Length: 270
Image (tube, rainbow, N blue to C red; front, side, top):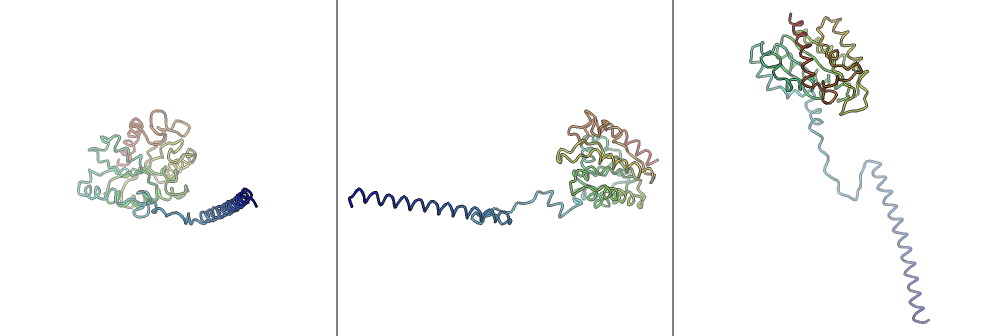
């Protein structure tokens, strides 16, 4: 066998070996990929990579499990207010971000009037019911103004069930009356959609809950603050210029609401 033939023989052997090795490695790669896919489907993750540190839940998510009603939010302010005469806390405005923003957009409405803002952004009626005693009844006001329910429809703390919201609002009204506190129940402000949870189609849900609020207030002889009547554009959304995001009133929107609120308070305290 010549030298050239020997070299050709070894070249062919090397090529065959490489082909087999490539096929073996390909099969091994496919096997590993399948195993990883199986691990992921079982929720195990990639066993060949170091696992990252667990994700720390957002502060609001932690609070839902440690202080569901957010009782800490106004605790110090409540203690200070209880030391003042009742005239400084004669009406508590109780609610969510729409109430909380109200105190920031027009603080003059609350200053020197005895109106106290106790709104917490994002809250639903079950959360508000938890803090009702601390943030309303403990202040011994003459009246409470309750504006709540839109975040329930937005499903901030779970699926929306109208009867649950109705029960929560009923419980707040009953608790207030048992303590001799006059009740002002407000209709939910309009919202064509929720920018943080789009697609929930809130218009018919808000309309139905507001219809219940009006009926309940009439049956129970509770004073009604009908904000929907002055803010609604006729299609379930906010009138132009009354909101910057379609959900929360602007300063102009609050100005309209204040006319309704003052009349309701006068009626409740007459």
